[in-house]
Length: 179
Image 1: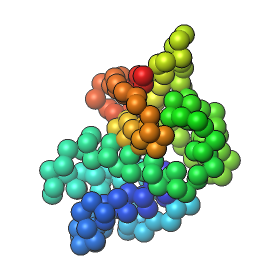
Image 2: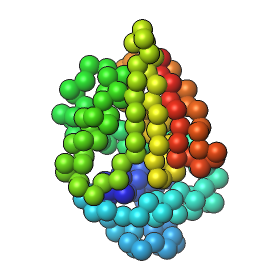
Image 3: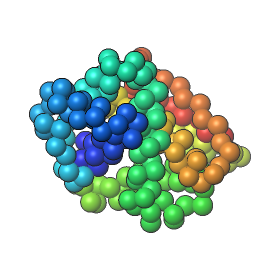
């Protein structure tokens, strides 16, 4: 998993819980990287999961809600970091529709070893509903949901999102219906 996700997560934790909490978490959770990340590095996604479980054990924040909230936060970070990728689209449905063909393709150019989720988007016949199939090796469908909501708010669109878990509780496969 790319370091930008980890550095953004640490920023998110600092904003949500404070620097003292972040320092305590980094001192407590045993991870291979010792909590030291660069935006261009690649790290085991299990480290992120360990942090999330640790936060849940202390704060009792529900994991799906926290991960979704982080996804929303992450979209803001990514849109600030890569504004040209986002500004080329007129609305959130157009942006989400082109995630795999445009945004993920550009990420793969920059980061050759990036392991991105599979995102297959299709419009219905009347083009007022987008169906996004999400599948990942990692359990981050709630992160995807947060990213989707962040995208919708970025474009100030009035769109509802329904998520259907297709993973039998593994959080790695879902269908999103946006309309």
